Amino acid sequence: MNSERAKIWAGYCAISFIWGSTWLAIKIGMQSVPPFLAVGIRFAIASAILFVIVKVRKVPVPFTAEAKKLYAALALLSYTIPFALVYWSEQFIPSGLGSVLFSVFPFAVAVLSHLFLKDERLNAFKVVGIVFGFVGLLIIFSGDLHWTDSRGTLGMFAMLLVALAQASATIFVKKHGHAVSSFALNLVGMSIGSVALLTLGFATESLGSIVWDRAAVGSILYLAVVGSVVAFVTYYWLLKRVEAVYLSLTSFINPIVALALGALVLNEILEVSMFVGSGFVLLGILIANGKYLLGKITRTT
Image (cartoon, rainbow, N blue to C red; front, side, top):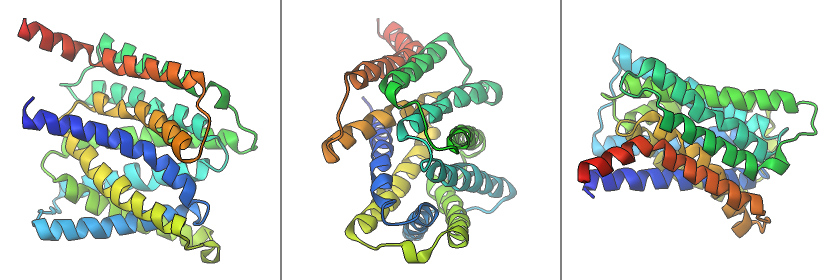
């Protein structure tokens, strides 16, 4: 395995685990800090770290017309809208239901890739693999697909919008973002997103409700450094090297990681359905990569 391929696999595994772990960190942090302020502070810290990295490494941050469109797309479709809606909807629907609804993301990426990326057309392997992954999440969260709050329907709709917004951002960056460093993309996009989310937080939430305990500080720092800087830079680095659909399949793995960590850290019970559903998810990812794997086998025989 060459070094580039090893980095790709390492990055893929890293974002699968990191974004699976962020659900636990968010759950812990929201006990002490209101949601919009929490995510706004998270992105502000991450933006500051990215600024230092960009300066130290002398990464160019272009402000051409094309680059400005990329920054705007990321700020709006990857940071501001999705994270505001995720934090808001989690108040009204179970996290399991949210995970299933967000798993529309690979479907949306697949369709948009087929329409706008001429080298990443849909094939039977991708479709069947995505369906298997989706069925796997349905099995895992079969007992969690309900809501009691009257605003649950709005929460469900919000999660679908999150998936569509993130898919649109992914395709836009995949199509137009090759010339801009992933550090620059995230620095500008995340900075704009942090300002928007902090403004929303200051307008709708009480600063007096913040409790700066160890859990709050630890959660925000982990989400800022690992969940934002490391994960998003890695994600958009991978996006330039991996087909968008294959990368989107990490959204099927994230809930599995979240459940496993919940069992380890919060002593949550793992049901048999989790193991059965996880099998479907992993089989789906394998099937989705079937054309690539078959091609590799053919070339080596």
